[in-house]
Image (cartoon, rainbow, N blue to C red; front, side, top):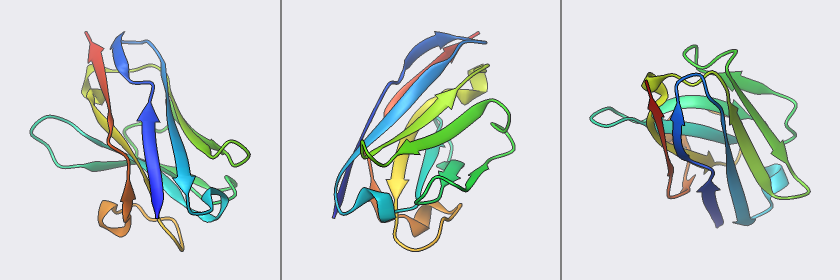
Length: 123
């Protein structure tokens, strides 16, 4: 099993920045591909970014590419999402997720989830 806990959400003005963290415990963190997903009110959960177990490979949704950066520190069992140039449409609950095997863009492929952290971007 893997336990994931997100932190770092909050209220920020458009154009501002936030850094989300996802602390992991349980199964060996450094062997797990991980991802960030988000769910806005009234919408389905959507892919934001993924990172390989080593951190050497990352992918982003087109909507966040160039503004968000996913990273991980395997010595601290922690994954991050640096979010810059935030827009009101980034408002959502952000979830971190982990899985075994290869990275995936699909939320259904991830068995381990955190509880989410809310990000609100005001215009």
